[in-house]
Length: 114
Image (cartoon, rainbow, N blue to C red; front, side):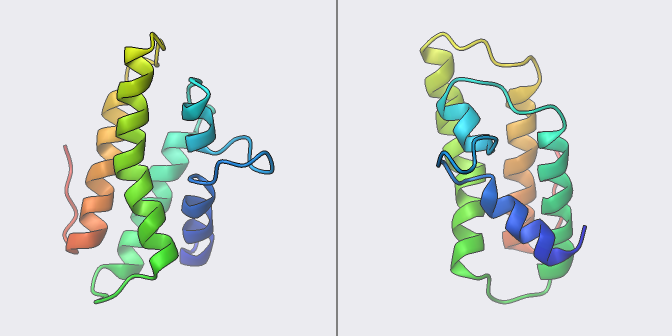
């Protein structure tokens, strides 16, 4: 996966329209778990973006918004779903924490792990 593909993929994961029914946010809004392999693909894309932007001093606004949504909004949707009785997959919370750590890594320029 190259940077541009990773960037587009991450942005697509935050779109909640009928044209993009398999985005992570769309699934979470519907109280559904991610598509198999989706979290792995997101984490891979985040590593590619990190490698490209590690020494960058700016990040484009569209990507920055997608990174924010992937790290913060997913946590909020997870908590709201749990409160509403959604039975999320067992390691989904840890997956979301890994996503948040990867996003933090992109912003800081230093790779962080749990």
